[in-house]
Image (tube, rainbow, N blue to C red; front, side, top):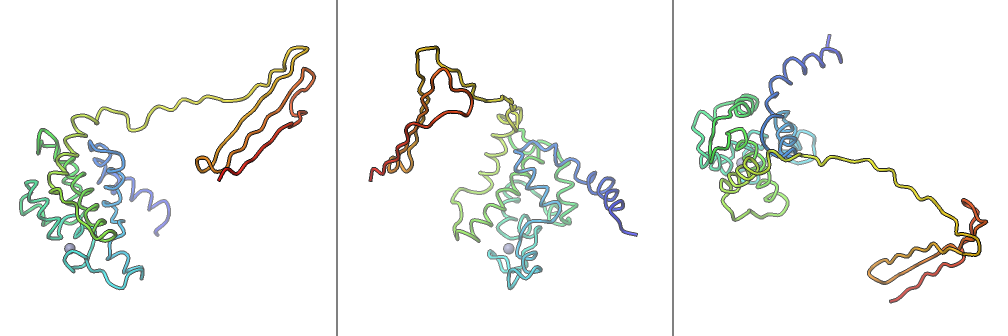
Length: 229
Ligand SMILES: [Zn+2]
């Protein structure tokens, strides 16, 4: 019987180990997350959108073939030329999506400028997807040769960014305001101001305290809002 338990074990023992190398690839976190979506065949390509009746057809806008994830990232002529520029051989194009990504994610042989192939793969998929989206949504193509953009991004991250933290360390700091009353014989003014639309509307206000006023028992004594334009 197919249940939540069987789904969990399927994922734990098969799928997760299949793509366990994904999270070790030396690339930006956003690129890893994108690869995860590729590996699980969950990109919004035309084939998937047509299957959900969002599009009328599943045509690739670049070549009019059916646009699956594999077609978009690897097999479309424009994507294929990128991978060939990067040094891929013909057997590279004979694998299924799962076989192709899985084998490439494990491949840490140096491919270009000492950068492992897995990193080149990650940025190759990322740039191919970006090219596809530029054509779909902006009807433009980047003039820089895609293989050069991929190498540049991979080399930059591998040699400069791989040791940086993906997320800056967060420091929690409690911020609060402690009202201090003025000494006897004194009054204290707390004020603030703001401007909107640089500067069309401005406003400011203030609270004057004497030594006997505590907590919220204060009186707003001034508030001004002015339209300047
Ligand atoms: Zn195509």
